[in-house]
Length: 106
Image 1 (cartoon, rainbow, N blue to C red):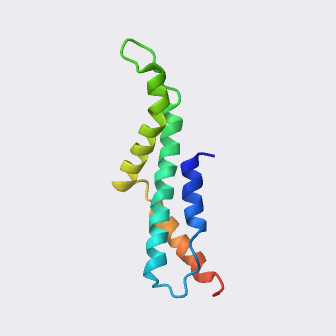
Image 2 (tube, one colour):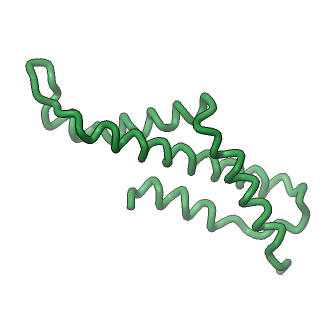
């Protein structure tokens, strides 16, 4: 599993239960985690699209291009998510908050 995907998943798991649905701190954390998750999802989606592109040719970047391609794809994913993405962040945020509300209070 990609380390950025693991980071996003750990961020979603580290959210504590919400005592009230209007908890701004956890709602903000849930929104950030959902946006991070969507960014990683888009990066994975784009990564498979870029995997078949070779770097050969007179203007190809060779080994250097291959080495930094994952960073470029991650930045594409962040940029696409910031511009609206696929619309996953809202659905993921809603699910995270509903799971927190259903969790027993500690």
